[in-house]
Length: 543
Ligand code: AMP
Image (tube, rainbow, N blue to C red):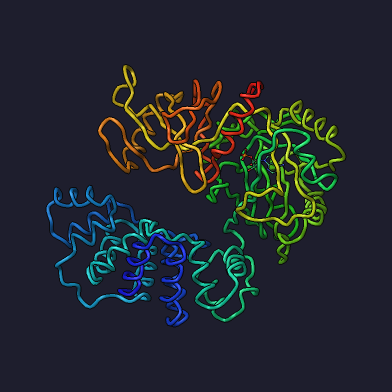
């Protein structure tokens, strides 16, 4: 494990992606396959493969207590070390330095210790197990054990780079390794297949979510129709919650776009379980009454309620509107064109119990005029706009491409991520209520505006504690925070401005709603802002 930790240090010190991949590959190649498989999982910053449901349930407080016991330093010293590094792993290394580690630990011993930690119940038992593990580890190794436990190595090695390192180490095409990892949800198992020269033999593991295919914005009928001509399929764009359904036998699970399990919609389980066979569906959970979609604000009231409520499903009924079928009875369908997936979807859902489960009605695009008419009808039905999909395209997980287009009602909002927060004034004194937010520009986030939160007092209090815990840089009055909270903001127009890094500023920005279903990867781009600005300057209002 010491070599693993040293390699992580070298990877973290390099700023070049190819160098990171090379370092990881060279470390993996000479290892025994089992060892390499464990290392691949750890490189992805996890104790267990992604598909596993097991969790360690070891929080910051428990780690803190363990280090306190092992290092025997006063709490003040620990706090200042933590503040210096902003990272529990780095703090652990510093505090354990100079202490003689008894013997060190191997990769397989660490893997074994993670199993023990996951199996132990209660903090006392976990603390004892963690103390034994960290007590034996060299300080540098302890640093990385703690980083794996907290779920982030912070060495700029994403799972996608680990896939590339595996491809590099065993001379396999990166695309095949990526696909094997997507299907298995297990980077260790993927490594084993790649090392055997057989990544194509990977089989789908149900009940771990696959990345969602994403759409690109278009803004007119001619743009929407022009992309595919007659080879496009139109569906309404429902304003609900994207969900991926996995079903086998009686077991049903729904996953959100952030790849977390969605547990709020209990009444959908039985109707989905009744459908024949084993499958993965992609679709949208929509509030549904009298044959039409309810506004998102109604559906939103069902979010965050983990325990079944007898009345809520009656007050705000939902429907799962399916629009894609990714896997059916042992066969992965993602490589088939939509024109072949779609009939299979319709056939599968023919037996579905409406209104709980239904296939999104779809129609061919015949002309720009018909596309416009379909868009108008979608809005009349209370939906958000239109989706236009290339019938010849495979399903590409996790990618935003031009094979799916989305055309929403004239744009008046942007999805942004909060990057900094400030304490408010008056009634909002003492709470973090002023949010600075950013859009995406390539890999970077660039600030574009600041809004006084339009959230409720309760939400503001909740997010104040969240932001206090996720501060990256405390500048006194202002705090730079981890970019995680996605908001939808409305505004009157976009102006050129030097005030923010993006070169633009929003006029009269206001927060419309939180988007907990979105990650910073899903927010709007600077390019979109530029387009809105251009449209305005030619005289059209953004709506
Ligand atoms: P946006 O959230 O604006 O990026 O738009 C893309 C989202 O539209 C998807 O992630 C889905 O949640 C949603 N959506 C609604 N209806 C459909 C549909 N028929 N096909 C695909 N996505 C849809």
